[in-house]
Image (cartoon, rainbow, N blue to C red; front, side, top):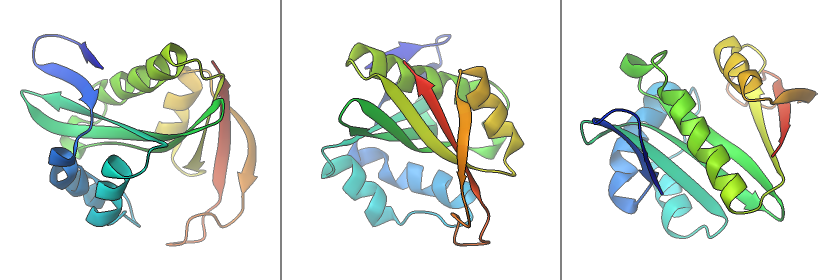
Length: 153
C-alpha cells in the first residue's frame, strides 16, 4: 500500500526496519509508551495487526496501527513527530487506515482516545467518528477516562 501527497511524502505499510524510528515517536508522544519489543511483535508476529508509517523525504515522521477483529478495525495508535504535527500528516495516516479498511471489506472502525485530547478528538470527528461511551480510568499513567469512538465504513 502506498499513497503520495506531493513528491516528498509517502504512506506505506510498516516493516521491522521501521521499529526504531517508530519507537522514538512512541516515546516522545505517549505518557505510557509501548516498548520497542511490543512494537516489533505487532509488526512481525501479530497477524491481526496492520501498521502504516508516513515518511517525509524518506524519514519516518509518524505511524498508525490497528487490529483486525472480524468485520471491525480497532485503531491502536496514531502518532506524528511533534515537529510535523498540525501539518496534515495525521490526516494522511487516517486516510490510509480508512482506505485499507474499505479496500479489505471491513464494516466498522473503533478507537479509544483520552477525553482531554481535544486535537485528536477533533481529527476523529472530522472523519465521522462519534463518541459512544467512556472507559473509566482507562489510562494507567493518570487514571484518565477514554472516550470510545465508532465509525461505520
